[in-house]
Length: 221
Ligand code: ADP
Ligand code: MG
Image 1: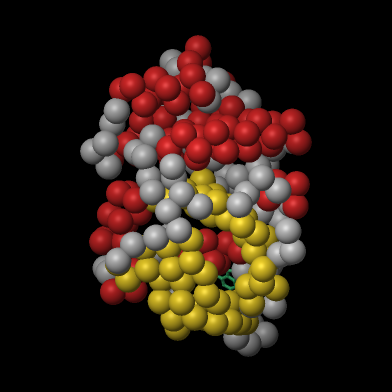
Image 2: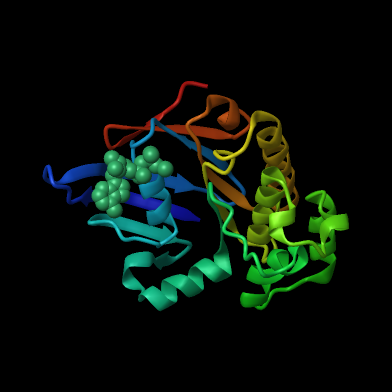
């Protein structure tokens, strides 16, 4: 479903070109969960952005299903993201002027796939049913991230890309968010590519890969 083939990505820096990804290959099958690990600065976010078509590789190809992302215009890539992907970041990126319910359904509405029963189910699963009329600023950090996860899953994407989704949370809130993520992924059959530098966070995932010096390596289980 997601296939990165021989991806290279170099950034220009004042000190000269910085090769962050060096002929990286990665495939993810439907419904699979994969933890992408590596130290800060190892290129995890870069890889995730390429997988989402938010940026393009210098060399190599990214396929989402049968579509090669670099063959699509920016508009078409945005449409593909809207139709097939859910995105969750360390920052929650909620809309402050929208209620919890409206934040939850925002992406699904944009994708034309609003489903009232699934919305109600998500509100309950997120532990936010009684807060549906509140606004994001009235929620805790953990609640806000649960809402951001719900928003990403509301349109029933095939693949969820999550970049350090628990990075801004304390351990208790992080555990709740991870439990929720795992439950919802299992329920929806959505594949998950999660970036984390925490072995504890990565533990429940099916596959574990490590980025180091531009290369992707299998992690011993
Ligand atoms: P990670 O998510 O693993 O912490 P990143 O993918 O964010 O790593 O960054 C990898 C390296 O590339 C870092 O050294 C970072 O400073 C550098 N980098 C990231 N984005 C840019 C950019 N737009 N321009 C220049 N350097 C960048
Ligand atoms: Mg990062």
